[in-house]
Image 1 (cartoon, rainbow, N blue to C red):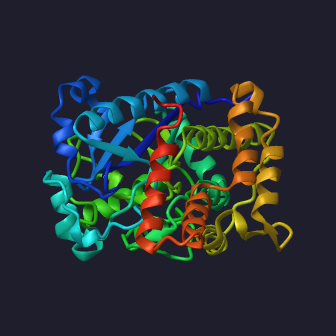
Image 2: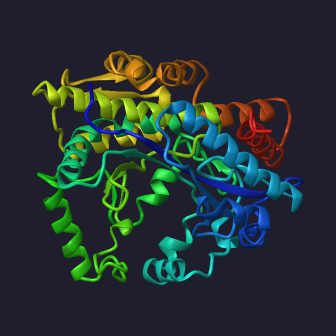
Length: 389
């Protein structure tokens, strides 16, 4: 048995598009002013760009509740968007949009980010998905978060490979499955998180960053703003969660729920091992970063390094091996069906693979590049709202 609530929360950032042209449109403030969106409350928010809208689920006890939340939020936001003449798509880059043409939101946080990061911030035409796993806010629970994060770092590349959805940038295939990861790591304080001995160790680092002005203004409680730490996973003291940030946005509901349930199950497995006085080996960041690059570059088609065996193993094999690892906790979490969808992702490809298949098929059938890219947007649109309306 695990010894933490291990609730699930999911944040998704959607692209706002013109349904006719597929172009991004800077209309988030228009949608947020709609009474139907306002009734949803804090679950719908702006993000850095005016062509982005972010949703956050309620706290979910299991994968089934997470599915209901995502279906509801995608449906409600898309209903409002369509009534204004727009729509949403879920992917981490847009196939043909240019960052130079995008407009940032006017909120103080976004303006501070643009002023501090300059050209780097302006290039952030990317979209993310964050999964929160609930542990609790006591000191013992925060220490547990840090211990589990240290071990879970090893699995971050595997999670990314299963979620890749950003193979295009500025109107062409990049040759990478997660170009979002490349753009995002231009920011400071990103990538694989450091190893910490305790929550106090983490807190001291955040305090140091705050004292030297790296994190901007203090929060209302006088503490440094740890939300400007953008690692691939981070403790969230306020919510008592471990926030996994490595994922690309999952295009389909099935994928998003699968990835969230997979992360929850890995946490449960690591806690179970801990309760048996066992632990997953802690690996150096350099080794994990090598696997992350392989996930970024090749996605499911590549090989990640099994550092225990010191050999490269096909990611598709490792995905099935991961399911074997968590097999003894998924029934307790009531998530077997959700995590088993990993097999479908392995078989049919992640979103990035399917986008490239559409693009290449259109080109092979005589379409020019612009037509093929528009077909990718149409494909993303159909997959984003599948099972929603």
